[in-house]
Each structure stands twice: as structure tokens, then as C-alpha cells.
Image (tube, rainbow, N blue to C red; front, side, top):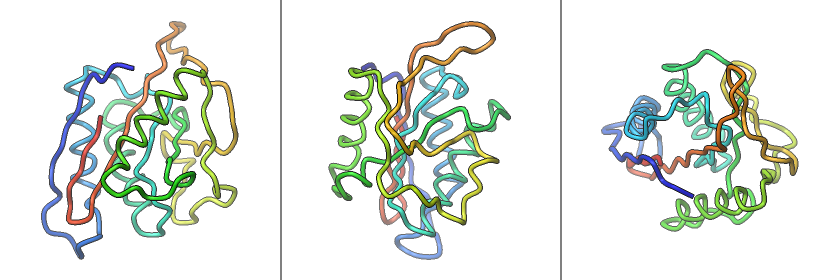
Length: 168
């Protein structure tokens, strides 16, 4: 795997220590995409921070959607998942766990399912986003955009309590 871009920021004051800031998340994702020179329409998998919370997950999806919609209005083209459903929250190792999951998916050409995702968060309308929750093991197909096959590409989001945000 090759990391083409990364960015970090801080969300500033929010309504609480564990409450994320979707605008700061969208900003950090946008900066990483710009640094990498990657059109998000070519990203076919996103490893989300995704802790399975009714508050945090909708905010994360809102930030991701805002960042992607700056480039495309296409819907449900990018699979999304979180290693946390498989291994729990590893605190400071969560980001590297996500990177490891992506590298293994690249190696095997398959997208692993997020566990416990049979029922989706009712606070997220995925049909209006670029994302679809990866609910079963599937081949990781290379996207075809405007008749051109593009490489498998992915992103990793990591957001911390207190407002720290990172994306690669």
C-alpha cells in the first residue's frame, strides 16, 4: 500500500469532550484528498472511525459526505466499514488497525464485512451519501469511472475524544 496524503486538525470547542465536529472532520478529509491529488469518486473503500454510537457515527458520516460531495454528487459508490466491529476500540492503536485491515483487504482482493451491521443506524440515511455499509465478504472490484478502470483506493478516518481528527 502507498499512503499518498494525510492531514490532522483539531475541531475546537464542541458540546462536550466526546462530541465530534463534522466540519472539522470534513476539513481534515478534504485536506488529505487535496494533498494526495485523489478524486474521492475513485475511492472504493473507506475505513471509518465508526464506533457504533448513535451520536458519533452520524456526525462522522456527515463529515465524510460533506468532504466527498465537494467533488461528486454520486451516491453509494464507496463501501464503508470499521475494524472496531471486529476487534473493539484499540484506543491509540485504532488507526493502525484500520490501515492493517485495508492492507489485508488489498492483499486478498476482498472487502471484509463489518460485524453487527445487519441493522443500520436509523439516524443515518445512507441512500443520500456516497457510502454503503460493507455487510458481507465480497470481492473488492476496481472501480470503472467514465469507462476507465482505476486502482483500488481507500481512506482511513480516525477521530479522538477532545477534538483531534486525522485522515489518510
